[in-house]
Image 1 (cartoon, rainbow, N blue to C red):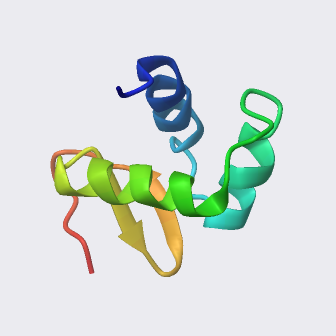
Image 2 (tube, helix red, strand yellow):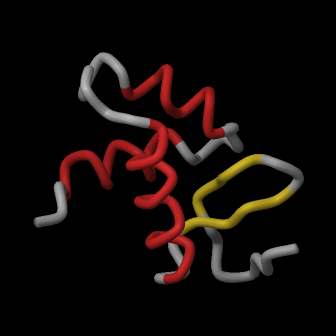
Length: 69
């Protein structure tokens, strides 16, 4: 089951571009047991759904005009 609260908080954090490491550190307070692999899998799913973009080693919330590079 997807955790909508984690997803919403993640999208909030991604208003500013962040690396996987930055996101993992920020999310440790909400989810102490969250592994980087699990976080990466969530980011990949959100990217497939068009909610997240990946550019120059950083993830960010996607705007409609964005295109992934």
